[in-house]
Image: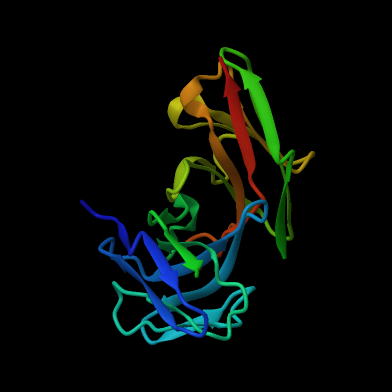
Length: 114
Length: 117
């Protein structure tokens, strides 16, 4: 079955560490997105990519980096520059002309700073 | 530019009662509108969508929503709440650019629905 896989489900980071969250899709979608979710703040867009080897900053890109070397994969790195990284991170994908069908979401990664 | 406002961060209903979750949008172009549901520690699941066809949209689990352009609203309703409806609900808007754009979804702040027995 097609879908989006995020891993790991839970991740713990020490102060000053970089960590990478994985997002893989087999839906043949061109566009992929990373959102951060905090209680009471909805979903905020971190980065998005509409084609391989290209990506754009979203509303809260500072302290994060991404790559899009393959259509299926869009990993997110939370760097030590991100001051408050503890959050629930959601990856999503969508296709050209398919925004009328919305996005498909992964099951999320909960990141905690220890 | 587009934005979504969900009125009420928490809504509480009794089992069997009407569910009404409010969403107002702002968009400079004709919008696509969506409702998503999220259960704890899970991703978002699409409930229903408005894509400029019928203004009354029926979704999964007995939910429906009506697009009212004059009121810029897209409220979510369900005639009779069930305990399993307890979750967080998100309204989202995307520009209607037909088949020429990926668009971007802009989400509301979310509404947590509690269902009492």
